[in-house]
View 1 (spheres, rainbow, N blue to C red):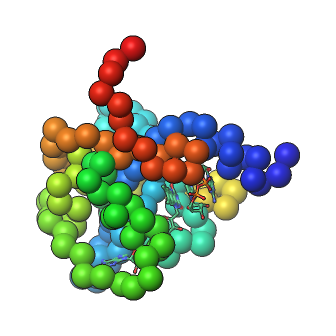
View 2: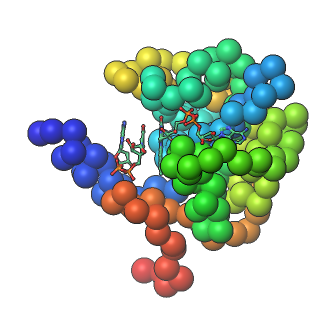
Length: 156
Ligand code: FAD
Ligand code: NAD
């Protein structure tokens, strides 16, 4: 088994797409992530997995807080941008939820304090205690097989 086979297999698991944001000394940093899991209801905990190569890792460790913006199908451009796949840095407009910057017009925004962190291979798993939530009735952006998708309207 090589890395390509692993990524191909993991790509068979369809996910939503999020942008994680944190703020350190007044500077906002954002990053695209699909490794996002709901963990516990009591207390309300979520998990994100951050690569050791991501600038987000040290920034989040230092700030001790972060937010997860769940992207709508209108926000594919934000996913591409915050994955570092755009040529130039842009001015991005954030809105504040409990003093934490989040992407406006997201499906959901969850504002968290870092509750725990575990190094796991070349990633660190951050568990966040959710303090504030906003939600909007919009259609999700999906990621499957390394490509962006939209939800089909039909049900099973
Ligand atoms: P950078 O690459 O420096 O930042 C990302 C981009 O955002 C840069 O262009 C930067 O200029 C810009 N930016 C950041 N903050 C601001 C701001 N305040 N204003 C304007 N521009 C700003 N990696 C993981 O570790 N875990 C995952 O779960 C994960 N899931 C992914 C899912 C998808 C669908 C994709 C496409 C990528 C995923 N990645 C994931 C990869 C990750 O998004 C990239 O490696 C990313 O570039 C790492 O970000 P970074 O923290 O190193 O910051
Ligand atoms: P891809 O085909 O590389 O991704 C398919 C799936 O493989 C992803 O959904 C994820 O579950 C897994 N994966 C990919 N890279 C991983 C990594 N470094 N660590 C752990 N799991 C990983 O999709 P793509 O369009 O080629 O991705 C674009 C870029 O974003 C690539 O550089 C990729 O490595 C990165 N990415 C990283 C993660 C992550 O770190 N968890 C997740 C998705 C994409």
